[in-house]
Figure 1 (spheres, rainbow, N blue to C red):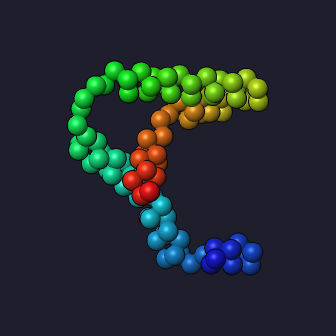
Figure 2: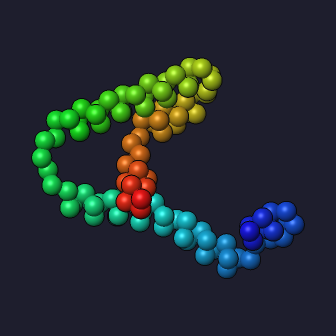
Figure 3: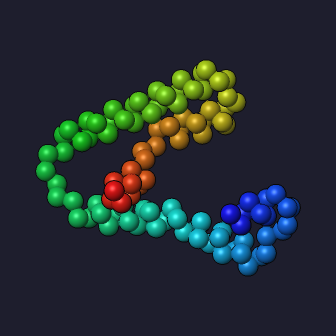
Length: 102
């Protein structure tokens, strides 16, 4: 709610508040990766054939969706590379944390 105040009034955010929220935001992804790493150390390995196949299918589908978006929307070369890369990346961290919370 305070962010809305700063946006609508045009009031500059105090530097101490900006630095604090930037530090918290910058720590989010590394903390998520640490959490995922800890959970992966506790997994018991069994049959890996099915998960590996589905992982490869997911990567191929993401790549295909990225190429489809790029060709439909006519992105420039750097933007196209970013879209294809982002579509191909697995979303394991957020999926894991969502499943862990629920």
